[in-house]
Amino acid sequence: MSKMTPYRAPDGTLWGAQVRMPSHSSAMVIFHHPTGETARLNRYAWLNVRSATAQDPSAHLDAHTLAGGLNEAELARLFRRSLPMNTERPGWIVS
Image 1 (cartoon, rainbow, N blue to C red):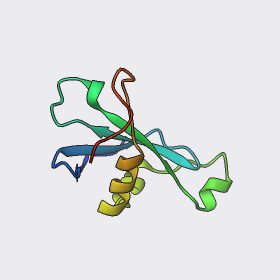
Image 2: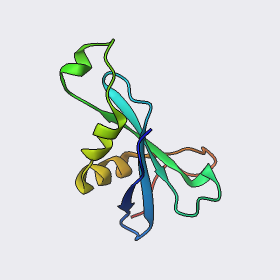
Image 3: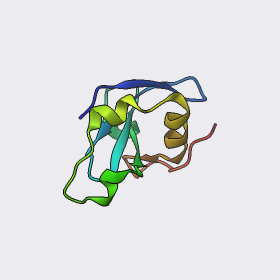
Image 4: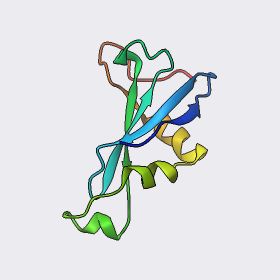
């Protein structure tokens, strides 16, 4: 699990992005809602990695390295593609 990286959404909301569950070719990026009261507003997206590690199923990516490589543009792309953790809310984002 990586540390939280701040991400400001187009509507001004300041989310915390965290890389979790790294495998050999992907990792889950969790966008934590700022209220922190409940996980029902959190969102997630999959970060797919194209590297030599992705060709070796016995290897694992490092969550801290992946988190350090996420710039503002990449976080924005992942946030646009993200889905709600709770399926009782719509999957789309109005921006």
